[in-house]
Length: 175
Image (tube, rainbow, N blue to C red; front, top):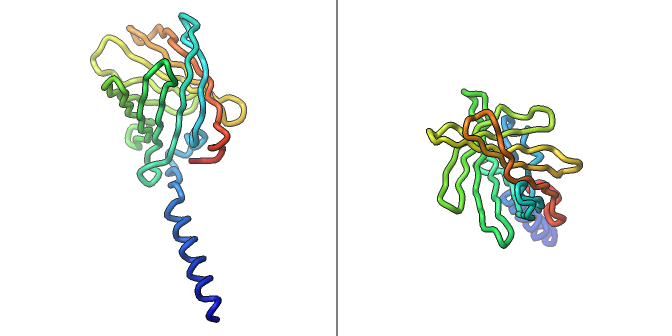
């Protein structure tokens, strides 16, 4: 019995630590976005010039699973970094995103959700003469493609860059 007590205490502490370290799962409203969880390396190009671009994107469940946080970091020589919070507005029945970037920008986006294999974020009208959007498309496995586009009239979109993001080996499970 004397030997069993330390083993039980160790087991209980290990279990409690594992539960404390376990990342939150997404709330049901965000379940359609669970496939984004994890870290991916992205490669693609600027569509006008053909110049190569790459980045890392990492998604984690935050705030008890009510938000999906995305960190985007361009690889050198580029330096665009962004922090995004993706959530769901039950009253509007829309997904919402707030994007903060390394140039001091702050934008709000909305999406009706998946349309087949496409998920489109379009920024909410802020009174500026330009809108932008991100189109995410599922790819085989846990990969996705995202394409960034802009418009001045809200109708005719010009794609700026497009990258395919593939799960990094060290983060092949949900984050």
